[in-house]
Figure (tube, rainbow, N blue to C red):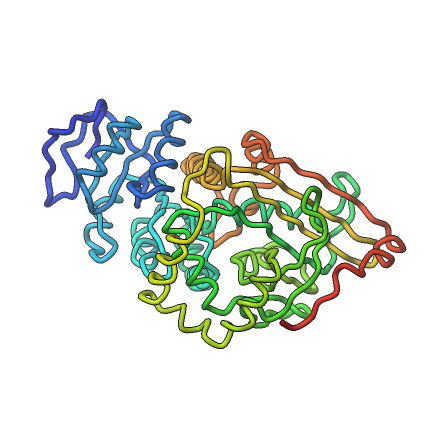
Amino acid sequence: MHIVGYRSDERFDASAGASPTLSGYMTDILLFGATGHTGRLTAQALAERGASFGVAGRDMAALADVAGATGAHSVRCADATDPGSLDRALRGMKVLISCAGPFVDMGRAVAEAALRAGVNYLDSSGEPAWVARLLGCDAAARNGGIAMAPAMGWDEVPGDVAATLALCPPAGSGESMEPADLTITYALPSQASTGTLRSAVRIMGAPGVWVRAGQPIQMRAGQSHRWAPMPPPLGVRSSLAWPLAEGHLAPLHLPLASLRTFVTAGALARTGMRALRPALPLLAQPRRADAVAALLRRVGVPYPVPHGGKWSILAEGSSQEGRRLVVMMGVDPYGLTASMLATGAQVMARPDYGVTGVVAPVQAMGLGRLRAELAHMEVATHILELPGHEAAMGTGADAEGRT
């Protein structure tokens, strides 16, 4: 249904999955999972950009609240367990945003509905297992003429931008990109929503992907550690191997001889990971992951914390010519995710948008546009070039070992 000036007493046509259409009004973007924390922020970001969008989910009363707060033009009933409801909700749409996770549990039906409807798709996932699964839809997406862009938020958008900057030749140099070594280290925010905690525990329990000698290899959380030269005020920090979606996304568009992904972690985290690692695969099971996430919520920092959510990403690109360090620092990861999803959906709704297949963030929107959006979100970017001889002298902090 398409509504302008949403009223809480609007009648819904359950059989059509929508309320009556306002004549002459078109809705381009459908936001599925609009009643969660990220979904609500994304609806607000879409409204601030003047987007033509609708909201969808199971709880019609909660959707009504979101529509009333944001002026969403459309409210549609859709359930990930009911493919028919997804098909009905996508009628007339150009782009589908999915914010309903964990995606390894709920994402498949939504992505398949986008394929059936022939609409561009993007989501807020950071789950490596989901991105790996979605890559299996690449041929179908290309054949259908649509783009599917997973992980279009924090942490993978700034990670993909940093990785690209760490490996790309200087603009105007005329140099081609040669296979290089890439290491990405995240200093994560100290707070997270309940949904993020659930997904993080699932990620910790499932295998991820690194690249070695140009080939993908399987890795697991905590299997190794390194001392990462993080920017001030962090300084050199101990970090643990960590599965990240960028392990699947970066190889889609960057020539990699090797790729490693880490998160910073203190001595207590390293000790705990060493003790828990044999049991980590059990955490990939939904009920156990939910129980651990609930425990973390009770003992962790309440969310949200005003002015909280500081994060840093270090991407280190190394080749025979030297070493380039790219640092990205910001705050408010959820606001950044909402901004990226809203901007990405508007770009993908344009009639001249020609990207197809399953793509990384930089492929979906372009490096320049993403850098501009990150700058608008007050994300600071610093690039340090080290010639070959200086890079060789500065590798001591990068020693990697088993945990």
